[in-house]
Image 1 (tube, rainbow over the protein chains, first blue to last red):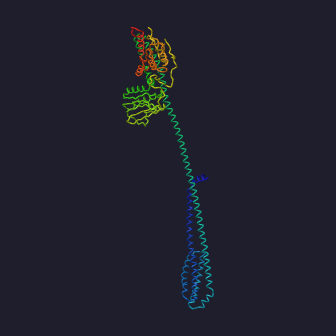
Image 2: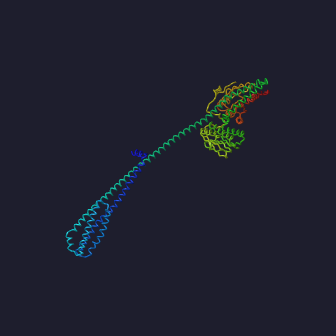
Image 3: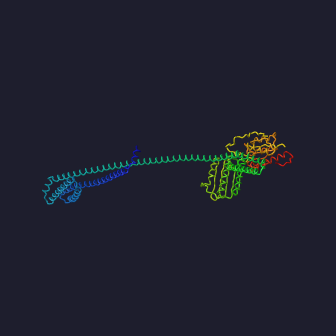
Length: 483
Length: 135
């Protein structure tokens, strides 16, 4: 529930103005409370002074009366000191009180009353003293006996006490006011604290919601990325597989064609050649024209055979099948040296490789040499073949101008295809080249998996996985006596 | 004169037939047997009961290789002559064949005449004193 409320509040546009108003409200409450309290305390202070003055008034008058009585009794002038002092004190307090109660509707009349009675009393005291000084003894005694003085004092006391009570009541009121102000202020501050806490909770909640959202978004993004990455991995694997398949399919196709050409076409051409030879021997010398025609026929057949051989050789190097990889590479290197004029050194050792591996290595060297002739501008080439720790290493190094191996150039497309073939055969290809430092193309393939290529006893045929023998001719396994 | 006895090791029926017809027509020879793969060729050639004068061996066979036939024959020290008749007569092949005991190497396409001459000469020589020049 807090979440709903908090989210609603958090999103509302009123939130900020309301919060501002609440803050102002509390601010106003505390300020006015402070103002009221200070005013009350000040007035309380004043009230204490007022009380003091009222009591002073009373005390002074009592002192004056006592002094007067003393003087009347003893006739000594020093008893009049309090009476004389009283005049000034009375006047002072009276003036203060008048000033203090000037605008006070309740206490105003009271202080007036007190003023009057004080005046009366003072007059009475003064008259009695005058009478005594003038020796009019009977007059002041009579005055004393009238009890006038006591009545006056009582009246004065009454008035003073009324005023004092009024003041006390006002003090109580003032204190009450202070307490209620403090109460209000306290409520205000507590409310504000509560609101702040609430706001803070909402804020924290918002933050955590935001946080959760962010984490969720990041998680979703990561999941998306993982999905894409796995898709990329899958696609790459598919494409790699396809590339390898295409490379091997190409080689198999070539092998198949070479086989067909050799078996079928080769046999036909050879048979034609035999017939031509026989014709030449039997009727070749009959007429010059026949001799000429037969010579031309023979020549044509020879050209056909030469073409067939060239095509077969391009499709599937015969030296590989007959003489083995080591010899085939040697022939390849020699022929390349003759064609290109470059100096070609070889370091070839007998190795054990499957037929597939052999043709792969052969094609690799072929491709490397072709590239050297086309691009490298080299003068020397080294071809090497060796076995090392269960791996067959083949490499072609040249001293040409090299290239930046990190850039994929058109000229290296052949090598890209080679990489797939080498990997499909279970090995790895590496190209090292730096501009100006020549190039080294090296690859390794797992050793073994085939008969020794240069085995004298059984040099393998151009072994291909596709059995392409034409419909088996009548040549049976057992020798057939033909005589 | 008794014709030269030939044994042909060749896996293509067409070429075998053409070769047999050509040789028998153009030289005093007779083909006494043929084989299409190394194993049966070796077995026949090494069989003492089989009489033959000249074996014509192709390198490409249905299984095995002509080079193997040569090697086995050489090891067995057979009496007859052995020549290689192949489509793939490069220098290296010639060297290899001769190292394995072949008496001659003929290219199928360009040296057919030479093979015929060789057979004729051999037939003459074998036939003993013969004054007629080879055909």
